[in-house]
Length: 192
Figure 1 (cartoon, rainbow, N blue to C red):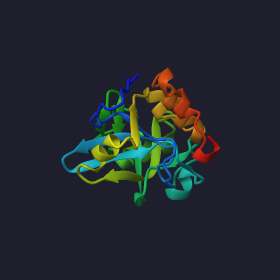
Figure 2: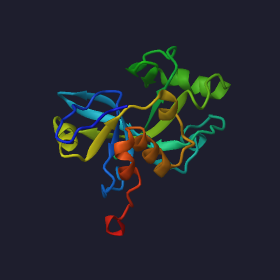
Figure 3: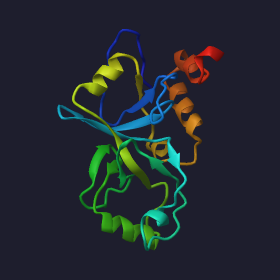
C-alpha cells in the first residue's frame, strides 16, 4: 500500500501502477491503470491494463488457437505492434519488470506455447501498442497530480476479467481509506 501525503513527490518507479486522477479527460488514460515497465533518462513506457478491445488473438496471429483472455490497447504508441507481459521465467530473452513479472521474449516460443496450450491465460497477457513519455514528462505529470502510484499484485496485473472501471476503482481503494472518495468520484465532476 502506498501512503500519499499531499505535497510529497514520489519518483515514478518501474513495476508501479500509475492510476489516472479521476477527472482526466483523455480517451487513452481517463480512469486507467498503467503498469510502468521502464523509466530512465531516455523516457518512460508502460502498458494500460484496463483498456480492453474486442479482438481475438487468432484474428491478429494466424495459426493461433482460441485465446480466452481479453487483449488490451496498451497505449497510443506503435499501436500496430503486439506486446506481451508474462509470469514465465522460462521464456528466452524476456526482460524482468518486477519480481515474477516479465515482458517480451522469444515470440516463436510464446506462439508455440499458446498453440500447444502449455501456457495459460493468467500467465500471458497481450497488448496492442504502449504508453510512452519523453524524458521528464512522466515525472512532471506525477508532480502535477495527474497520476497516483500504487502497487498491485501480479494476479491483478494479469487479470483481464475485471471490468475497466472496476479495475481502476479497485486499485484506488487499495491505496487506503483516504482514497475512497477518489474511487467514488463521478466521471463528470459537475455531478459531484
